[in-house]
Length: 67
Image 1: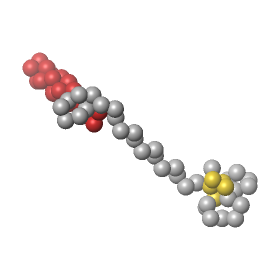
Image 2: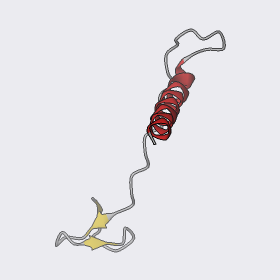
Image 3: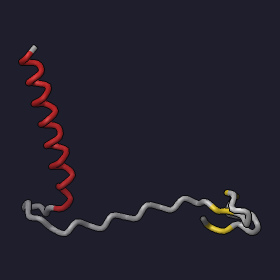
Image 4: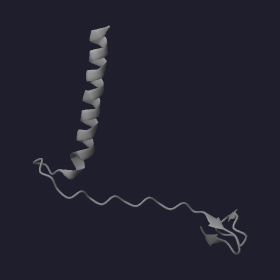
């Protein structure tokens, strides 16, 4: 029981370490040196509009303004 618990803990630690290494990979060049990370694209704004009363409406509706 103790061996299996230790093995499971070691596997969890190894997976978390490998995921951290993968996250840092884009900020390194081919030689392994640190470089400036490329800027991430801004998430697209949802197409939501509100009418004059403040309720959500379709953006193509008359009087609708982007929220």
